[in-house]
Length: 135
Image (cartoon, rainbow, N blue to C red; front, side, top):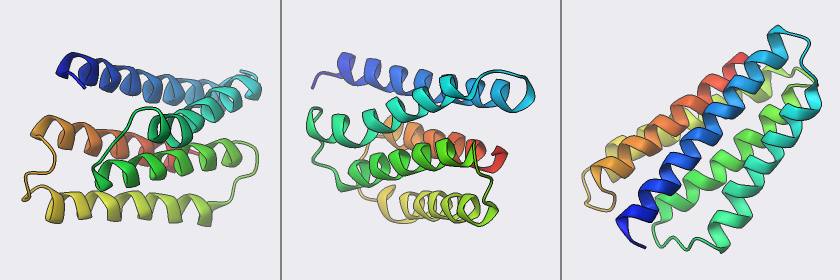
C-alpha cells in the first residue's frame, strides 16, 4: 500500500479508539445509553480482527498480533461495561503491557516496523490499556 493510504488508515484507527474512549467516558459518568458503546465497541472489534486481517493484508506478525489483541480488548471492554470483573480487566491490561514490552525489546531493534508504525502501535495499546483500566 502507499504511504498515503497507510497514514489515513492509522488516523482512522486512532479516531476510532478515541471515539470509543469518549463514549466509554460518557457512558460511565452520565446517563448515556449503553447500546451506543456496545455497538461502537463491537464494530471496532470487528474491524480489528476479521476485516483488517482479511481485507488489509499484513505480512508482519507483530501487526497481526497487535490487531488480534486490540480486537480482544475491545470485546472485553464491551463485556465489562455491563458486568464488572476486575480480574479480567487486569489480565488484559497485563497482556497489553507485556506486548508493549515485547515490541520495545524485540521488535524495535529489528527494522521490521518503521518508527512511525512502532510509535502508533505503542500509542494504540496504551490507549486501550487506559480504556480497560477505566472499566
